[in-house]
Amino acid sequence: MANDTNVFLFLLYYCNRGDITCKVLMTSHIEGKSFLDIKASVETHKQVIPGLLAAHALTGCDTVPSPHGIGKMTALKVLRSQKCGLNQVGLVQHGQPLTIAAKKQSLAFVLACYGQESCRSLTEAVGNFLFSFHKMLVTGYTCRPLIGRWGVT
Image (cartoon, rainbow, N blue to C red; front, side):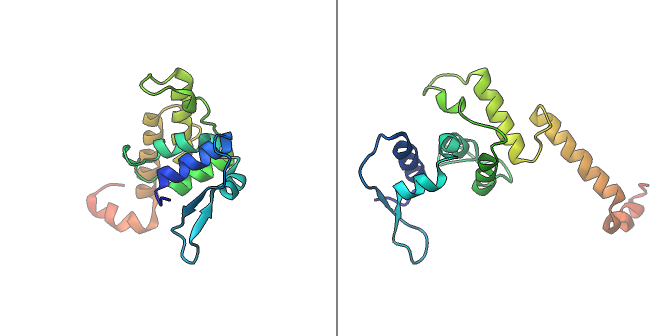
């Protein structure tokens, strides 16, 4: 028994693959619920499980820092939307460099998490954000008095 996210995700992954055939229960963080039935969770989340480990690594886990503003729920929404898959990322062997396909899928996933699917790079996404932020400052009603004091029109 464990109550760790990494353990939960590994159990989902291996039960989904069929490597674990016995009944698996895990202690629950949910108030009023003492155990999670892993097999039932596999059935509920079958659609996203193939990309779940890669998404967990890309959005931060015990050994990887998380990107600013991307939480687990955002990642789960992107996986459920099927905007981009992470199947190539999951094929990378431990200690081996990412393939070009895996890098493209990782980038597409992170851009989708930030709502920047039309961008081709993180640099372009940051540029779009800064342009939108500047436009908001210049045209925003609440910022007008402040901008006027700075002498910016």
